[in-house]
Amino acid sequence: MKTNRRHFVRLTGAAGTGLLICGLKSCTAPEFNMKFAGFTDGDMLTILDGSETGEGLVIPVKIEAPRGLKFSVNGIEAEYDNNIYTARVPLRDYSNKIEAIEKRTGKKESITLFKLKNYVNKYRFSLDDNIWFLKDINANAGKYKSIFENPYLGFLKQVNDTYGTKVHINIYYQCDGFDLSQMTDKYKPEWKDNAEWLRLSFHALQNNPDMPYLNAGYDQVKHDCELVKEQIKR
Image 1 (cartoon, rainbow, N blue to C red):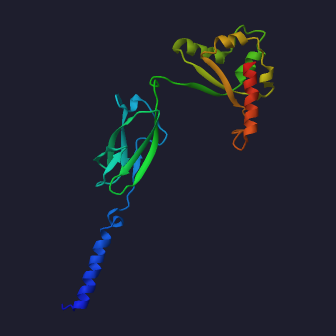
Image 2 (image 1 turned 90 degrees about the vertical axis):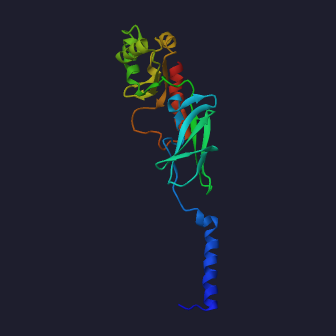
Image 3 (image 1 turned 135 degrees about the vertical axis):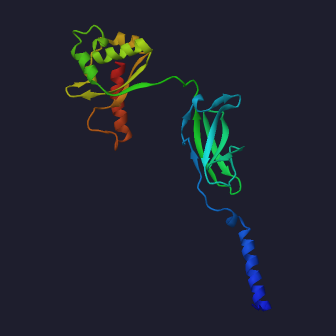
């Protein structure tokens, strides 16, 4: 096949232009997806999630992405295995920004992880939707010598006596035929004596309707909270 000089120049010029364009970053940076695997933004981690060293709590940060990329996480090179890039990153502070960078394209993703101290083998025991045990104690104030004669609190005291469990009870202000302003203060010394493990705090005005503060403003929530707090202190 014969080609004249003008046609040859046109072809080679177009080819050269193509090579030039494909040498730019836009041609050498194909689109790809990357995401953190294993940890989620806001996760709170303990020594059970890594190992404590002189650098801090070292954890395996994993990025899910295709083969052939080069990642670093907080400046630490990540190793590839089966579509997962892993870098062992120390958490030095309570709040730690974790930033993964694909080094050739500059593409970045970041999350924040929190390191909790002195947390392992501890737990919080919290109970919601409470007021009826208080109604019972008040109704039996002439009979009960202790708040723990109420079966509900009596059981919780057994748990505390056996395991040292501290109990947090979130209470309503009112239920049918009773509100906290009616609660006897006869047992106030006993509440104080057990305050180290038995706590009361605000939950809501009442049990119904469900989700009462979904559309409530600050003033309404503050008002109901103060109602409950005032009676707890009394």
